[in-house]
Length: 506
Image (cartoon, rainbow, N blue to C red; front, top):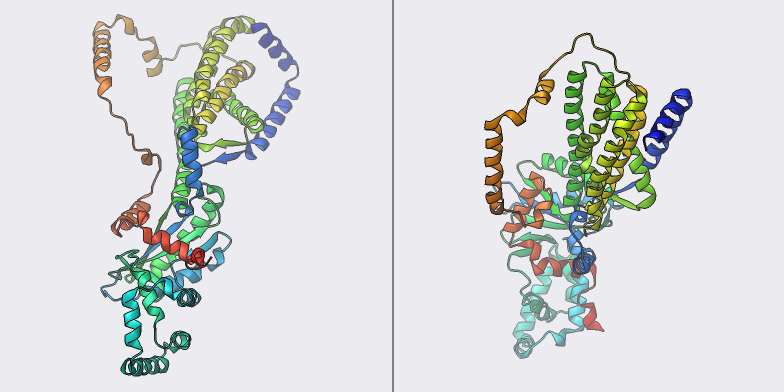
């Protein structure tokens, strides 16, 4: 095995310029294809799947309610009867430019829907009436009742509300249809909500609710991110405009999904940057120069790019969560380069170097890669991608380290050996320290008895990252008569999406 790397070493040494151009070309190709990878930012990809859970996931994806965004407009003024409709009207105007993201807005009953409901009940009135209603109709046919109803109709037609009521009066002068409409109220959809200025408002008038139905599914965070960012901007601007009067907040799975996707990206960037920074500082301190740590990191960077290139051709989508192992991979893969550096420092003969280190490094990376490949057999898509990405990166990093490091690193003979705390830690004879051995033994024995008492979080909901403002919105919804499971909300969404009781007509 070592003969192959010796051959490569001399081949590259004789054709340095061509080798550099070849390596740069491969890096550019890897970068190009890596930029084309479609990353899956759905946190649910980490959940193990089987036939039963797959069916559940499909059902949940078919439920439109799970993709809705519930907007809460809260009364912050000191007036109990403050009209929330002004803020709602302004909000609806502001989101008009976002129609490419929004399929429909529910929560406001317009005149057409009221008219359709009235016409439907009027045309199917016998289906809604009982014996008591017929007695009421008989009473309405009395001369006194007719005279009173005509007087009420006249007053209504003379008032500003005549724009709405005149059509109802023309169709039903005696108001018999309203006996059927009362039956809809008798369904007892909810005692906690009412209609105010055509909007759904809580009974105390302190909260107004709107429902946004995004065109994209909640797990399509790539497109939803731009929508949520613009929605946040509108929310912040309106909260400033109506400060002290109303406050807008919202909650829903699309918002949580975007927050999770953004947090995953942020966490990956932060962990990788922190690990690289700490390792660079330690390596610069140890080697007393800046160039050597760069050599140490080069095989890792190159292997990551190659791994992404391979994944591009074997996977349609890659879970972004799989890249979260990046910080761990950096710590694992630079060990191969450090191992080569240490040996090369004490043995300048390149052929002897490869004879000593090639087999141990390849075997070490192979065993680590196999450990990661075990994740391919789990039922979690994210963990499968993680295992595949890590295994490919580890095995490639050992190979690239054997090729790159000896070419770039040329050890110099030091006149005086410099020792630092890292050298002291490494050279300390731990095996001769009896108190340390006894202490470690006691800790190991204690762990054998104590590991059974470790508790695990079994709440799958904790997988989601929920920002503070969304937690506040969630708490508001829970106070509003457990809105997330309220049948009134489901009924209202259906009645606004379809014509009222369309199926009964057939």
